[in-house]
Length: 91
Image (cartoon, rainbow, N blue to C red; front, side, top):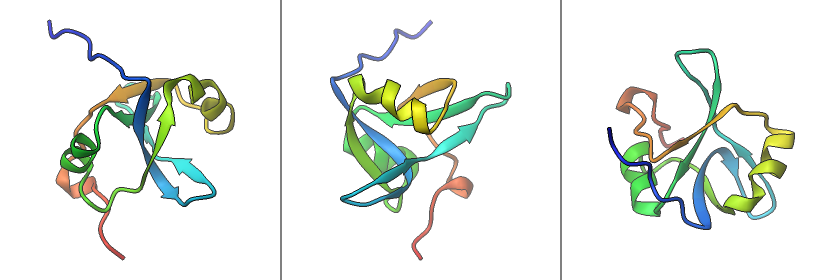
């Protein structure tokens, strides 16, 4: 069994949209009908796992209750790889 990842006080949150004023988390359905939010412990991991076109924001892990209040999710996936076919593309 792999050890649980160490979560830093801030993470890179994968988003559907992100700007300097607002963001919308990128939510994904899991195989067991849960809704997952994707977080990454480093920017290079986000780019490696999601591709360079993935929007993101840096958030404090203490902000997750507030994020869940407006974008409900069941589970947090840490450093999860998105298959190439499902990654965001330019344009």
